Amino acid sequence: MITSPGKKINRYYENLEKKREWDEASDRPLIDETDVVEFFKRLGFKATVYQEKLLRDKSQFILARWSRQSGKSLAMAVAVLFNALTRKGFRAAIVAPSKRQSLKMVDKISRLLSRLGREVLEGPPRKGRLAFRNGSVIEALPNNPDTIRGETLNVVVLDEFAYIEHDKELYDAIIFALSTTNGSFYGTSTPGSRDTLFDNIGTDDEQFGDFSRHHVSYKDALKPNGPIDPEFLEKIRRQYQTDPGRWKREMEADFADDEDAYLPLELIESCVTEGPETFTKDDVISGRLARTGKFFVGTDLAPKIDLSAVAVVEKIGRDVYLVHETAFPPGTAFSAVTGYLNLLNQRLKTVSRIYIDQTGVGEFFVQDAYKSGLKNAQGIFLSLPKKQEIMDYFKRKMQDGHLHFPRDPELINEMSAERFQLSKTGQLQFSHVSGTHDDRLWAFALAVYASRLDTPTYHPVAAINTHPSPRNLMPQLPRSLWKI
Image 1 (cartoon, rainbow, N blue to C red):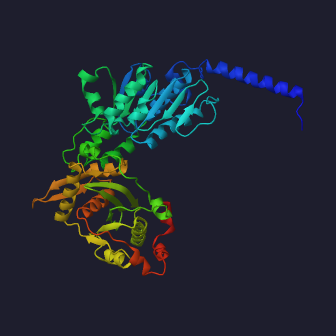
Image 2 (image 1 turned 30 degrees about the vertical axis):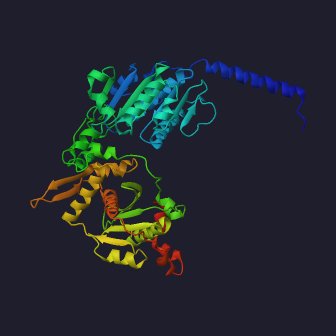
């Protein structure tokens, strides 16, 4: 059907009118509020005293050392969004220890937009990037100094600052990115290791005296003055009662030294580095994984309420890299763990040795694993002397700079929560904080311990050929495991 000239002209003028309205909108603020605290109210929230103090702070450099669950992320999301809506061409970057964490902050900001009741974005939101009608942009950027250095930014939010890898190099790059706009910097986190830039900025008045510092402990954030529920707080307090250092960092938002921690947080952070590509449980189960190398596996079995865990390390020269770790829900059948180990053996093809903790299950599991085709499996009974030997080797590899693993908050928490005390016989006794697990840690430590002696790589071809089909192993892997 041919459109008449009159309709074409009307459509043309409609488009011109929309463009004129769009251009006018881009020259004025996208919201009516001119006060950030009033904007906070419009979004449906009531700012706490400490949130309002942060929101109204006009300092160029701000450090927020707040406790967990105190409302830090919400305050930062509102502050960045307010600037994007009221300043034409405003550019903000969210940076965190991992891109996934940066994306979570941008997603939180995106969800706040639904509360405005008006369209302010230029097109649909993209993952990790929000482009506004006034030319403003909020974007999640990777934790990479080179990437940041090439940007021109008005604001940078460095979330979980205390846990950022290469923090000094990244901060230097951020300063250059802000220099041309005379932009602002927000560093937010709970405290971590004492050997961090976050610690230096929070304590060194001579070098970082121009920073505006905001400290909020759980006491400041308790209801009705904040969002922390007293009952929830008591549950957390009971879990941390044998870990005062972690309580001090996470809830008091204060710096602490872990005197009874076997693996100091500073040492743990020094080993968080990039290495060979890691893989997931889904990669193993789906069959996407097919790699060669020098691999070693550690397995920590949980007969009751704890988690069964599996860790895989790859040895390259003298260096050992964690390339995979996973945990199974409490109560998972041991046959499922056996099936998973068999799949690992098949996918990786070059697993040299599998160490299995047989302390709570006896020799039955190891014998059953061996019969199922795991000819490279070996049981380890974790007596006190053996535990000390394994952990000593694990810690030495860390201290020598030859142990590397990606940033994994759950694993790092397990490592930092491992405690020790000296027994009457002079041996170390290991334990973990009540309410936490150390299964991933021990699976990791067993894998590293297995790598200490290079042995001829085991190839499971012969074992597979003794079965009618490799699929014979699959019935040992329940379908529920695929959703883990």
